[in-house]
Amino acid sequence: MSIPISHTDLMLNPDGSVYHLHLVPDDLADTVLLVGDPGRVRQVSSRFDHIELKKSNREFVTHTGVCRGKRLTVISTGIGTDNIDIVLNELDALVNIDLKSRQIKHEHNSLNLIRMGTSGALHAHIEPGSTIMAKVAGGFDGLYHFYNDRDQITVPGIAAAFMGFTHWKSSLADPYFVAASGKLLEIFSTSGQVSGITLSTPGFYAPQVRSIRLSPFDDNLIQKIGAFSFNDMQINNFEMESSALYALSALLGHHAVTMCVAIANRITGEFLEDYKAAVDSLIGMVIHKLTRE
Image 1: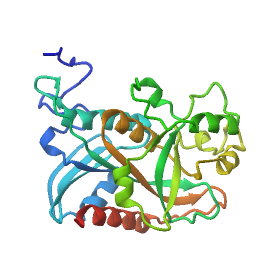
Image 2: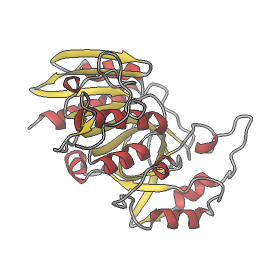
Image 3: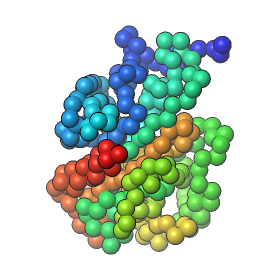
Image 4: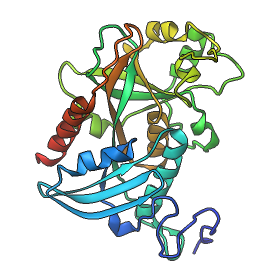
């Protein structure tokens, strides 16, 4: 028997639940819907036929229930790849670690992780309210570089091409690019859908080339990003979570995909102030495709 995972590496609460999410294994469905906003959890679970569980801690709100015979969990992650680091590691622990013995289970379990979020579009033709699917997620955040990648899960060539094209600042973390789950792309892809590369940033302002009183290092970065393409894929939008979601899911053996509503267009300056209906339409589409079998 291997050495148990230490109490400081795998932190548990007195009731045996994982430290931040406050969940135990039975609380979790195999298919997990991820949203950033804690308030959006209720927007999703209101479509369930029955809600069996509601738990919350800090920004992490979880509802598990049944919709058209399929058990689903919806969890709010809060903002940022650092929160995704917490959520993904703790979700994986719930299904792949025996929490009592602190041993890795012999049989690996894979989760389906579907992120539904909001984003800023980076091309003039993408209208606010459009849904964008991330076939590949790129990260400016650097989180992936802290992990040992034995299987080389990043998409070859994109990072080097992007850094060369944009004259990437050497003091920043190298961007990384990871593909979505092919299985989930097949489920959620539709004709005419906007799809390609989504970029996750470690902040909302300068990392996304916004300027209020502080200036970003490269005022022309959005134009460079918009002109970049790789294997016929363009970078369509900014958001703040998908790079870590894709990287950690690939490293841990889970399936992940992100679909985001564009609530602003960074090229035209358009902003969709009331985007609840567009997000609700995305939620409805996702649940429909998950439960139509």
